[in-house]
Length: 308
Image 1 (cartoon, rainbow, N blue to C red):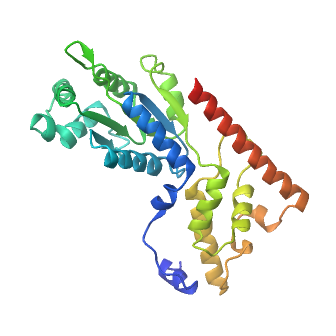
Image 2 (image 1 turned 120 degrees about the horizontal axis):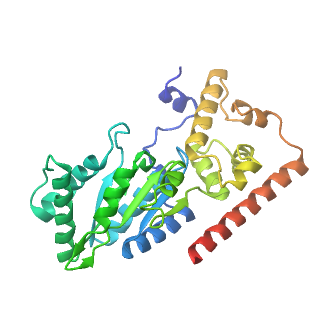
Image 3 (image 1 turned 180 degrees about the vertical axis):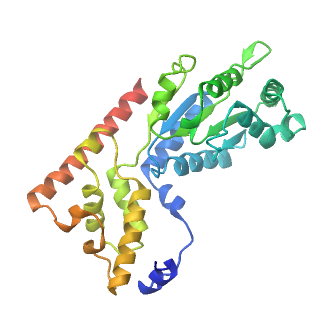
């Protein structure tokens, strides 16, 4: 197995710092997500974002929330980003809440041993924040692992009242596609949580592919890679290749080129069968048109959802 340093030296590349987040922040999807989150926080909403592993949903959503926080210090964020999938429960979420913002609002960041007492601690935090005209936003990653009890506990937090007025804790859930049916099957919360599927557009994925390839591939080649990895069925399900998948393909191609002693990265280095047999010009044209139509359909669906 070749080392990354050897491969970078072979292609005369300097090992860059990981600035993928900077590239993501330049996409329309990031800006649109940021605007959506600003509105959700302002209106104290509860929203679920779902997407495949490596789709960029967590990086985009967390990055957008942190940007909003930097611009508006009038709220705090409780982030539960890497929960233990086997142990995650209401108690762990409440404990994280107390540890992260308890000191600021109730002078205590040590969670109680009993879950009911922890719940009371968090409710005190929320009421104190409300008195100070501050908001607290709860963000949970890998939320598809939550169970009914946890969702109902979050519902109780959102129903916390102060002087007979609901406080309404803004909640952002981030998870894999199984998050959506999990919410739909919970009668207590399914009418409260709106779900959004997360995916970059074809145009954005082409730009991300160019970035990940570190200048070794032309934009036309990047288009070909994205289109070949996207099927018609995927278009219908708003399911483009993920940045993680594209990055893996590029890393494999770079290693293959290195082993062959080739100084330029070419399609032949990619282990994507369809790329080895390029479609005729007419078929390639059809693929590109289909992709553009798919993007247009997705934007229309998103617009209709926002309007509703």
